[in-house]
Image (cartoon, rainbow, N blue to C red; front, side, top):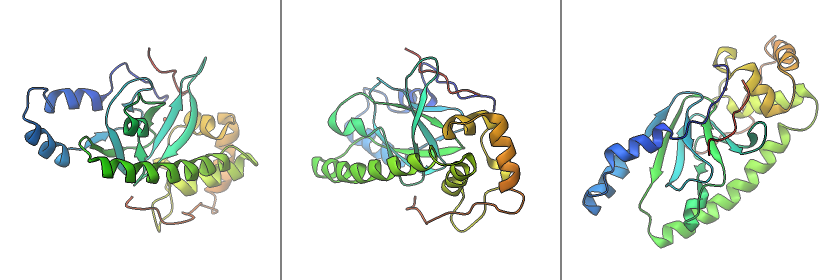
Length: 215
């Protein structure tokens, strides 16, 4: 994968249009939504900044959340298994960021929520935002090797080591840790020469330059 592109309409939006027709009975749509999830390959877009849609929960894999910027989109957070994505939908607002698959991802939508559930999820989302901000600060500060160690520890499966071939491209890693691809390549050589990062903690059940979102 040489880059992450943000197409005008992602596979999530197309899938929703196909399987959740506007004239379906409400009960039928709700039952379908409970069983419906979507799989994304690395580099595919789950949601777009400025668009409206459902709240999503990541079941497997990792997303990078992007804010539109010029000349490139800016990585602001990472979302992994168990994390909520598109939290602006809880207050009936447009998405504040785009979400692109950093690795293969499976995500599930929460399209029909009672008010009490929305309030509970809003509290969860607030705590999640605080944790994600801290995690992102770790992968954007310190030496490049330290930044990569933090990032790879996040991406590693619980209880196991991360295989180098499972990583996103050097350019994507470089943008996330704010470094040059050549430097990232060199530091990965050190890290995978025997000092392979492992997960720092268990999470809940829990790829070329990043393109600016399409208008």
